[in-house]
Image 1 (spheres, helix red, strand yellow):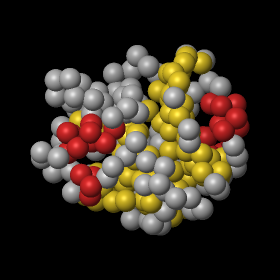
Image 2 (tube, helix red, strand yellow):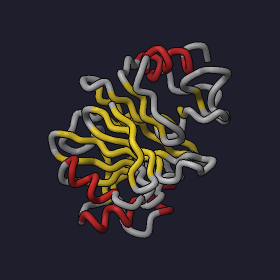
Image 3 (tube, helix red, strand yellow):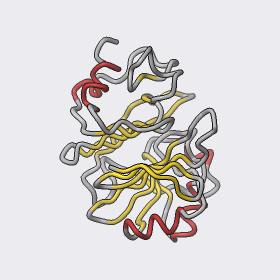
Image 4 (cartoon, helix red, strand yellow):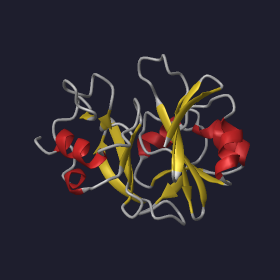
Length: 203
């Protein structure tokens, strides 16, 4: 893993993709991710950034843009148009579809052609969220339920649960990731399993 600054964007790379925070000094520190898979690159909950398309091309051909939290439609449609690929959302995510201008392709049990399972996190009238979990690669992407901003974490904790969530889904406690990618703040690439257990295990 390496960290660098490119075109004003905080970028973190790992073997299997990269993440970026397009506006590092933004309070919400909205994070986005590009996942390299056997089928191509999936872009998740993107906030657009200068030089993004070049970075994506270096990773591979973009095959889709996924929105897995209803408030994270962000710049998904603009990125998808530039790469001539669909925007996809969980089949049940009606809130997300209402916030998109165009029609969203359905995400089923997995990202098409990949090992990333699409796992339900929250289905409420005011909140829809799914996670992406590649157990073999050890990559867990949780866009809102988990985060690393001070509002999420207690003390020196590396990872925490969104303050509006009392009971995160129990399956999270059973995951054993090498990295946890989040939608707000820097993702966790070291001791991720321990950080996840600490965040959700005692709730």
